[in-house]
Image (tube, rainbow, N blue to C red; front, side, top):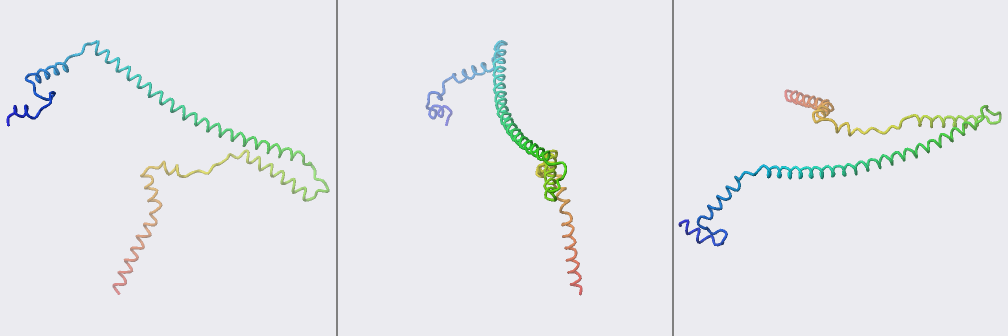
Length: 192
């Protein structure tokens, strides 16, 4: 079949039907339009438009980051305030307790009375030791149990491998010795 037959018979729409010399003319116009050099003013205008768009996009991104960070800091501040209020309440309770202990110790008589005996002596000792324990609690920093998991999480794979080998080599050595004993025992049994 000839190319003319295919062009006339198969392509039936107006947009795709071949027009003599119009395809070549349109192709030439496209080539000249794409190779057309823009003027200096047009290039400058395009650059300014692109710069303005980039500045606007950067500004939007920075605002988004500022708003996200603001929410994070507000949450952290609320947590810190709640913690400090809790500590303030605990300190207030300790202050009341220490003031009570001081008042009780000041109210105790300095010299033992003849009628008190051992019960009065034991009561005074308990009061003094109770006040001393409260003082120790006040001066002793509150220790929280250390969590071992962050220490293990910070180790690298190589360090974890060395740790695993260090913990398991005695077991490996015992298994090898047991295998050697079994082989030696079988060899001795088969010779007899």
